[in-house]
Image (cartoon, rainbow, N blue to C red; front, side, top):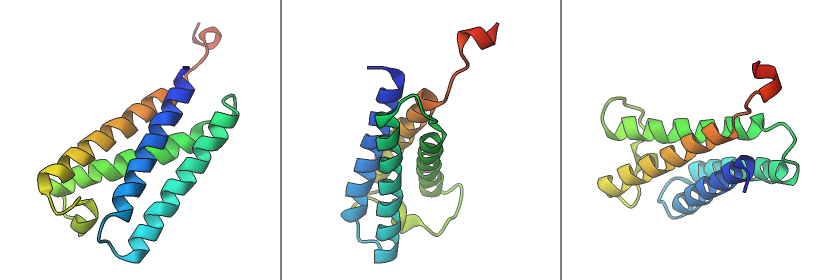
Length: 127
């Protein structure tokens, strides 16, 4: 499996876990709908890139970087470093330890996906 496909499947995993956790959370309907729409848009970008891997991957990189930023924001919010008033959005089943583990795992997966999906210069251009 090449890097692009691997990165795409990482994005699929992140979006799927985010969607499931959002649907199971007691958040307001507006937040749930927004989260599901964002995940669906990232899933569609992933589909397009998997369909034509030679195409521009920047839209998917940006979605994944947004997911990374969201989960890092969740971590710093739960650590008390920043107050975002989104504490309820970052908690999973009202368990702080589980929520922190969730944010760490998804931030790591999203960050790794960004790293893998970023376009690299060709060997001919590096010289």
